[in-house]
Length: 442
Image (cartoon, rainbow, N blue to C red):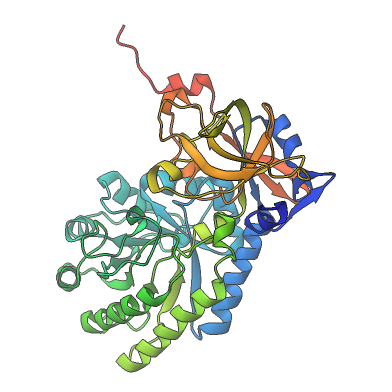
């Protein structure tokens, strides 16, 4: 039978059991649920800081030239996260005008904002031209529109300089992930340009007086096997040599390094191993091709923030049936659609009463009118009663960033834990919020 300690490594670094209750950073999770209500997302800064430290240490140890970490905003983004990224000295990957606006609200300087997006609107491009230091161009049509962007007046001393331009490569190979929808680098992917399109983009840029100073690719999200990265890096650096990037150039082999979501997936993937493979291949291939070492950009999101987040839900109805025991909680696919989208597996623990035997096998589902509104299936737990609070770890990435108002759900609040204190960083949506953007026909 699974015992409580087997699941603790899924939780944030500061998780403890005191008085038979779960605590993060010294904060009692049951008390947080009472204070802020549920569903509630709890983010532990110490866990994020430690992941950031591991990336920085690994880059310093394995890459002999300039390097940078780029936080992937799509994992989870709000003003507090933008401020944290700024304090870490990170760049931030922003997909479109909305995320760029959050980065600006979080007081990130233009040089640290990298604008992404597979089908950027004109508003996205204009926001990038005004506020971002780099635009990653996804396709030839976009490149032509970038060429027509007016020079802008933006904060800082260099008011007339255009953003740096990188090209996004489709490497033709995906990493191994648990679901096809989290793969991005395969030949039929909607993302990026083929090698022929990259060559054409380089010609179009040169003809239009646009300096291309970087190459980016991304192969998938939540992977552990680095082998496909090696082949993609080789392809990208051959292209860099062929299209003639400047002496000072940038290279980003994406991100997507995994996190363990279930005790069956432990131990946590090794950040140092991931960085070492990338650094070794970039140095090797640049030496073979007589290329100057680029500024190397790594783009983690999930592996920085996923484990730092814990979702708290309160159990409403309990349905004990012959076929299955259902614990019905007050959140679900409206704040975490990953099980519905990808069949993602999670684990959980009650926030108190940890000493009980795990006598039941349960499934956990939400209140929404969908059979797919399921968070966890067939997980050993103690006998859980109505009103108890459950903590689902590894909830920091791709939950709130994909949350919806399905069935009139209001997006949950998020709380930041730092130095033994809790602070609200995302307020819970209200009934009034739902109607604020709607118009009457009367």
